Length: 195
Image (cartoon, rainbow, N blue to C red; front, side, top):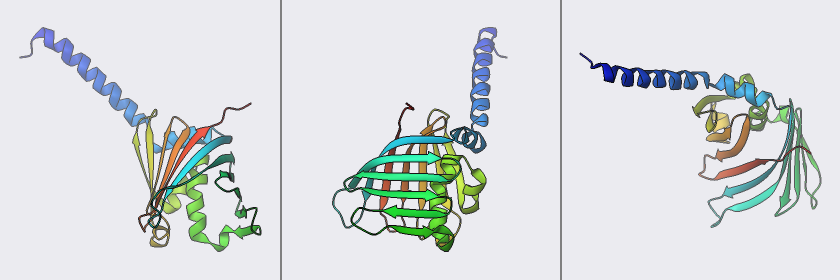
C-alpha cells in the first residue's frame, strides 16, 4: 500500500509526465511545417563552411539569403567571391562576376531539382514536396528541433547522403549537408530583422 504522503508526490510526478508527453506529442512534423509555412518571406545572413576531403581547412563563405514563398530563393554569396544563385520556380540562374550567366531549367535535372527542393520545401513548410524524395524524421522540441531528410531514391543519395536542418520555433538556424564522398557543408543562418 502506498503511503498518503507519497500519493501526492506520485500524482504530481504522473501529472508532470503526462503534460510533458502531451507537449511532445503535439510537436510533430505537421506542426513544424505549419510554423515554417507562416513565413511568406525572409531575409537572413549565412556563414557556410564546406569540409572538402582534398583541402586541409574548411572553405568558408558568407552572404545573404532571401526567400519569397512559395518558390523563390536567392543565395547571394559576398565572401570570399561574389556569386548569386536565384531559384525562381523551376529556373536556376547562377551569376558570377568573372563568368557568363548560367541559367538552367530544373525539370531537365531531376536530381538537382530534388536537392534544391530540400531547402525550398523546408522554408515553405511544404511537407508533401519534401516527402516525394525524402524520409523525414523530427527530433527535439519546438525550442530546439532537428529535421533529418534522408533521400528515398539511389539517384538522390548519389548527390547527398543526409540533410539535417536545425531550428527553433518556425526559424531555421542551421543546415548541414552530408555528401556520399565524405565531404560536408554546414550553413549557419541568422534571421535579419525586418526594417
